[in-house]
Image (cartoon, one colour):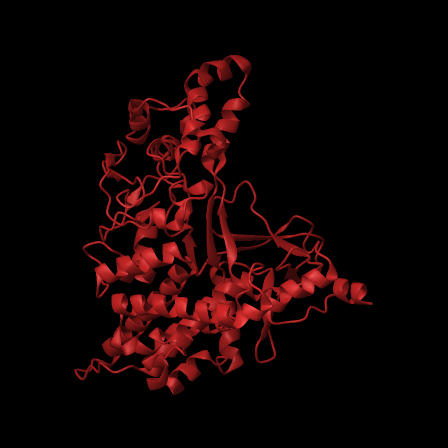
Length: 493
């Protein structure tokens, strides 16, 4: 049965205006020039190529391994299953709290039988309330244990049987700051700043990050008492659905919230300039298009049309699979619309817009990766002189044994980076995404893979470039183009 969304029919012309390439092209160029300036990045430029295409070009020579770009994400989220392993800032995704708190949380969840990193379903982490709180001795705030345990399931006794448990008193003292580990002061982490909306889900490294997240997205997506959502109860259902199905819906919700909040700010600024008493509650399409501009410049397709066909789905079942994906998106959209609907921005809640936003993420997202300071801490202890190491390991060895391999778990998620997303593909790329030792937040780091000359296009590989020619072409078909890079031309003949 064909899915029908009334908003798509009601706002067909306005939706078309939002989804077509933003005219004139100089506005797109102006947007990217401003982004580069805000990042103080003058060694590369974004160049418009035709109506749809863009590319990134070098403004200077780069040596192999040299940094080209540190790109801040426009939208990002930590995978729900990773939130148990890693406590990070909900805005910049740097690790927060302390080494002791990071370790204590992980040991606590192991003790109660929650092991998301090793394959529990996402539904395990979909709860909202927080019934287990400690206190951070550094700032007196509640310690974030993660999301609720009320609906959590365990991964079974087989995982737990391999663990050498620590006494609960030690785990608790790690979390509340009473137990200080040897040399942990050398691995300072920012104090935990809770969400001002009271949701006990979002935590930050600073008030600046908390305020930036609130004004950009979180004020509409917070489930706490100060939330501006129209229905916090339905918002909880939306988050639960996303965690159980695909957290790309959480990114889409951020994109819509971002646009609504930008629209409100633009309208408030216009009204203050005009000092008019005739405040209209109808949509100002020109303001909405301006609020939408950061999303409008991203390459988009409908999600159910561009998502890769899973290997276990036969080609004869492709139509049914894509209809299931579309139905999944529609279910998510209905929940989001009931949770944060804004009448003036109603067309953002059309299935056509929602599908294109998710498709933009599907085609352009980069893995969000932040290395764990806990791994660095244990490596530091291991590198100490023998006498110092022996003394420290009297405390750290039982903890390391209890953590097993999980001491090295990194922060993982997915994010959309506006400048990185302009980089075109090559099966013989001259650049790559690569995290250096000093890169400790969620920004994308692009470095030169080979020497790059001034004027050269900067390219990255969207796929594993070591695949065969046929495998690469098949993988790239999901992106909607046939690769004609030098490597493909050589191997085709």
